[in-house]
Length: 147
Image (cartoon, rainbow, N blue to C red; front, side, top):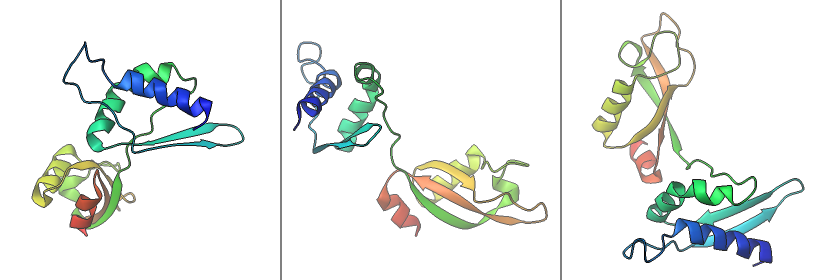
């Protein structure tokens, strides 16, 4: 690991892991993978951790991104699934591509999944009764469940 990679690794580890005197039973963050990618105009760092450790890193991101110039945390990856035959009158907000919150919750409950985002694939025609939507879920197993 280069000196810069080691410095970034140390900053993230120090700020993401609470000290033992503040919280003696706090979990520590173990990186499963830590890679740096140098591009011509920028540098990227990829950190692979478990879901529980990701929550810790995201909670403390404000403190460690402030100490690394230009650092930002990328949103978690969601898995899209195309859903046909969504009844427009029950799900779509008039004149937009947004699916109502109630329709999202109902769809998630009926299928036993957690819907992160749901939107129309394209603007529904005014005379159409049904449409197609894209549902984004957090886990790959949930996406496979819908297929």
